[in-house]
Length: 181
Image (cartoon, rainbow, N blue to C red; front, top):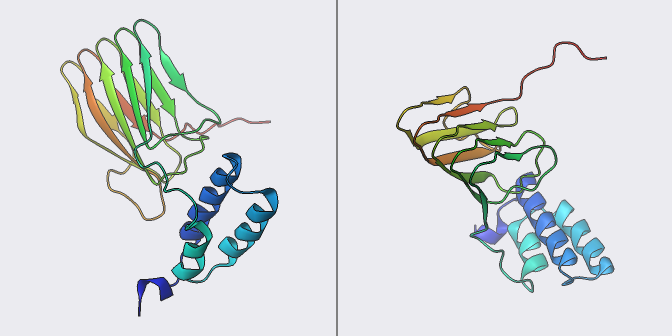
C-alpha cells in the first residue's frame, strides 16, 4: 500500500484546513475556493485526498521564530495569543511569564529559549501538555516542573532551553479556581 492510500487522522485534516485558511488570509485563495477545499479537507479519508488541496500553495514557513526582549521590564504573554514554533525571550532584570493555557497553538511542538540574567521564568501549559526542561540551566536558581517531561500523542510538547544567572524556571498547569459564581 502506498503512503497516499493510507488513512488520515483528524490532526492531518485540521493541519490541512489551517493551511488552507492561512492561504485565504494571504489572498492566495478566493472565498469560494476556500469553502470548496475545506469541505474536501474535513471529509478526506486518505493522504491523496489532502495532497491535491495544497499542491498549488507555497510550502509552509518551517522556522518561524519570535524574539521577545526587555532590559528592565517583565515579559508577559497570556490570554488569546498566537504561539510561534520557536520563541526566544531575553530579559536582563525582569521576569518572563508565558501562559499557553488559552493561547492559539497551531504546532504540536513549541521550542522556548530563555536568556535571563536576574529574573525568573514561569511557563503555564494547558492541561495534558508536557514540557522538557533538561536543556535549561540556572547558576543560582532551579528548574521546577510539575508537568510530564515526555511527549504525549496529540498533546502540546514544549521544549525549554536556555539559562538564567540568578533566577529559576517554573513550569506548571493553570491553578484551579475553588470559588466561582
